[in-house]
Amino acid sequence: MSQFEVGNLKAWYGEKQVLMDVSVTLPSQGVTAIIGPSGCGKSTFIRCLNRMHELVVGARMEGRIVLGSEDIMSPEVDPVLLRRRGGMVFQRPNPFPTMSIRQNVLSGLTLTGRLNRSTADEVLEKALGDAALWDEVKDRLDTPGGGLSGGQQQRLCIARCLAVEPDVLLMDEPCSALDPIATARIEELIAQLRERLTVVIVTHNMQQAARVSDRTAFFLMGELVELSETTVLFTQPTDQRTEDYITGRFG
Amino acid sequence: MANEHTSSEYQAELNDLRERLLLMAGRVEEMIRLSVRAVVESDSKLAEDTILLDRQVNRDELEIDDLCLVLLARRQPMGTDLRFITRSMKMVTDLERIGDLAVNICERAKDLAALEQLRPYVRIPRMATKVQEMVHETFEAFIYADSQRARIAIDMDDEVDELYHQVIRTVLEVAGGNKEVYPQTVHVQGVAKLLERIGDHATNVAEQVIFMVDGTDIRHEGKLH
Ligand SMILES: Nc1ncnc2c1ncn2[C@@H]1O[C@H](COP(=O)(O)OP(=O)(O)OP(=O)(O)O)[C@@H](O)[C@H]1O
Ligand SMILES: [Mg+2]
Image (tube, rainbow over all chains, first blue to last red; front, side, top):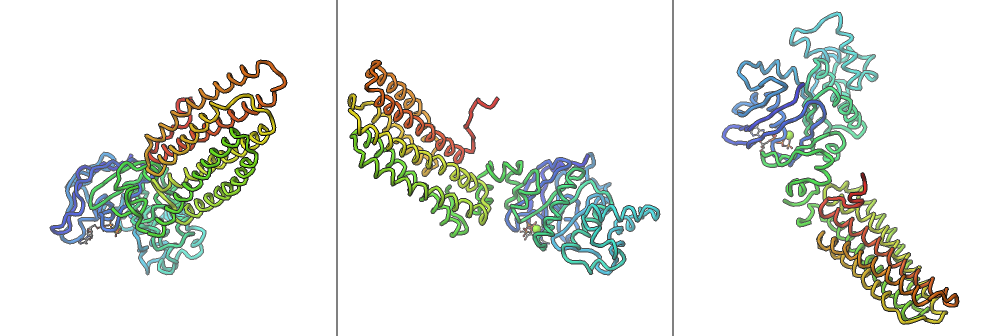
């Protein structure tokens, strides 16, 4: 299965080191939430997991990341294919605005030449269904993705990830632009996906982390301070810095 | 709870909760003291006055409960704050029950005041002092987040139980099968039983304090399997 084993991960933007020496195992299946103050390296960490970090000019990373049995830092790994294996959902929904809903969902398969005409409709319906969007868009599949509401666009992006049948789903504040109902839909979706995917979600909303995740990681200034069962981390954290953060106290 | 909250309003609400709990605990302690004095001094007026104090304790329970609910809904507390607030909700229930038991002692005091006193009370005041001390230690433990003191309070409960058995034995000896003094015997036993139950509630509160401070749940220790 697709657990992440991260060993001594370090990351830089230019000269500035932003991940210090992170070692952690994110078990396959289940949801791991990542919390921590702004600028502590949450996005950087999650972007290292699919090697998006190195797309930033001047950025580099070092260490060991093994996904399942595959060393994803190895020179043989094609980062483009890797990113297709693991879907990523960002804070702002980023569908291809002029592409139709259908094209958006199938884009991952089209781009990698894996689209099978005869099963396309099936894949489309399944991905949109899993993303809890099918009922809302089934009559307008050929209209542009940019014409959906923010919450629908975010679910469209999730459907786009799911269409390629990824092993992992990385989400960076996926609900921060959504209202409580749209947020609840996404959380419900995460609850269903946890059975078959490894989900990593960055969130600024501690209640959301508490609701959706099995484990929670607390980052501070580029370091992983604590990774615990979510129920433990929010009631009885081990580290005083975690305690101060989750209760909203000055460090 | 070393550091202050970033939100001073939230901090003020937590401080308010703490203060109200301490006030309530103080009132309950006073009720125990006065109820037993009413017994010892055969003072039914004092018993009546003490019963009236229970109204404020009942109000305290409702107000503190409300405050906890509001804090849970508005602040969505985590970590020590979550433990503090949820334990507070349990503590007030025990405190309110202790208040009720003190009222029951006052009722016994009124009955006893109308009867001839068999002999001076020795162990009853001693029991009362012990359970008051238990309540006091427990709440000191609570303010200073000192689970060691809560454990001391729990240990005191054994002494209370021991005193209880002594009272029962003594009462039976003094009565010596004399049916005439049956009512007194029953009431004195009743007072001792009530004090013993106050000790049990104080023990519950002390366990809440330990959970709040250390995060270890010592209720039903070794009794769940
Ligand atoms: N493209 C970049 N170039 C230079 N520095 C960057 C870049 N992106 C992030 N950083 C710096 O790296 C550190 C970690 O940033 P990162 O985006 O990982 O934080 P974060 O925990 O996701 O914060 P937030 O909660 O605000 O999203 C910060 O100090 C940030 O300023
Ligand atoms: Mg970020």
